[in-house]
Image 1 (cartoon, rainbow over the protein chains, first blue to last red):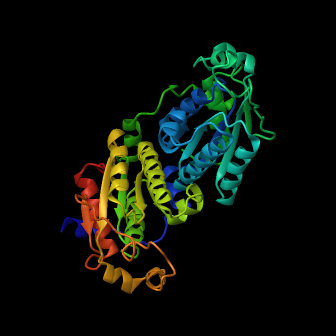
Image 2: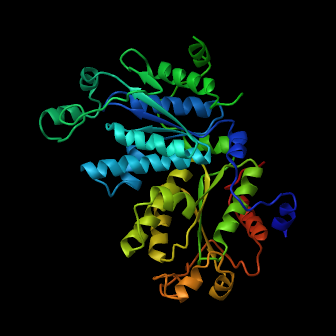
Image 3: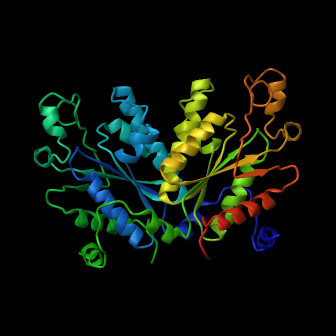
Length: 207
Length: 207
């Protein structure tokens, strides 16, 4: 049978594929790049720009954001304090799985609370997986002027409660790996800075 | 600056990387291979054997199992009916994200209820993602003789309640893509059959 003939060319193993084997295949180290910042700060635009740049260079990258998380894995979570915490915890666990599988994963969520982000950092440290926190520090005045989804307008009108930056706090990272202000840095420049960072850290292998 | 010089070689995009671009990079179509069967039936051994075979051929594959799910993403779930359903739902959503990212993901969970597995199949269909249900149909007598974790012994002694096959039902898939009885098929033979299936379906590209 064909399958059995093919099988003779394969060395069979039963345990986990090692991280080194994955790294050699993808020429990269599985890594989570955690973007945090206000609504409208530019997190997603930078994340998707970086994703394209990485794939174009032959690396495997993926963006986790509201579109693929809130309508799927976390569709049974609301916006209570406990649900917000669980939202970030699950995203952190999924990012960790992606990193373990060898991908470079960008997460694009406001993730306003320091303790929730630090928990995700600790999860990665426990798994010896790289975690890069990127503070997209665009000031709220700029974010509110842009208001791409009209959310600030609704929050100011009182139609949205507990909106980060208006009536809910945003806790800035104390020691993020990178800080990018999208007022003065284009998405392309931001992605280039991140590529350079990933290369310097040895997360991207030689091409 | 170095990063900006490099950036001039890149065509910048802001939207999602397409599934076609991912497929071209990995020479595969993102797919979930969902193993279902009794405890001790051989699901994990087959899954890990296939994972190695795929990576050896230059494909990116990953196994989701109790070790990386129950202690992480689903550590806040118990074994009540609602929690078991949520356990499988979350695993299905994560597998879908992995498939969307382009990976071939093997899930290794008993997943005894037909309706939970069918929900995961529907999730994948809605996202136009390949889903391959593999029934590891090793009879319970064999599973119980093997009893690699000593769980059947505990269940028979009444120390474990609601144990699938003893005092909780296992609902066999009605139309699985593949059925493998590990009594008569070695893990290597099973992995070879699955490789052949993936090639025939066009999920694995030409090498």
